[in-house]
Image (tube, rainbow, N blue to C red; front, side, top):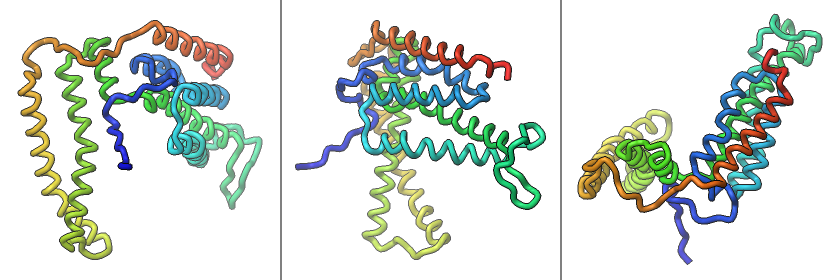
Length: 270
């Protein structure tokens, strides 16, 4: 049985998880107010609650592979802790509560107030990332472009040109791997060390640039053959409609976000 390669830029396959059935714009608009207001949060409870809310939505509405589960349950918390600790070390002691000393090394002291400020910053960043993953884990590039063209009336010349440009990224990765294999077959891998690595990468530039030019010419010819840009509108083969469930999801998420912010309202004046 041959392995099946999934292109990350094609439409997502049908799924029973509800997030895949929502309009991409709904998954972007729903957490956007919370992400904007989290920038001004200064406590721990508010971003922690939004992390829990984002995790709940993702766990219920998205398919979780081992890689995604590792990202959510290990990578994101570890990154938040590292950022929080780093911010705690850089916090000015004269602007925080110095009543509790957590660690003292020589003449330097890490206070509990600094640690709280640092952890709040790390958790705040984690909450923003977790909210962004609601759309990021369940939305494909073509569907997002189609929704912006169909719902936001973005000119298709801009939308589909940007999509064609994004598709260059996986193409470059594939061509770079082919060039590396060709160099290994010819024994042109060089030696070890930074200068050898620099020489190898310099040898990749010319064939990679030539491949990029050829690919760009093929894409331009294909777009010209389809009369791209000749008319103000184009017929859409795939429709990404805005349904009632999209409105319900956005309003429900806004209501949950408003409830969290109302409950922890004092941080606004902190």
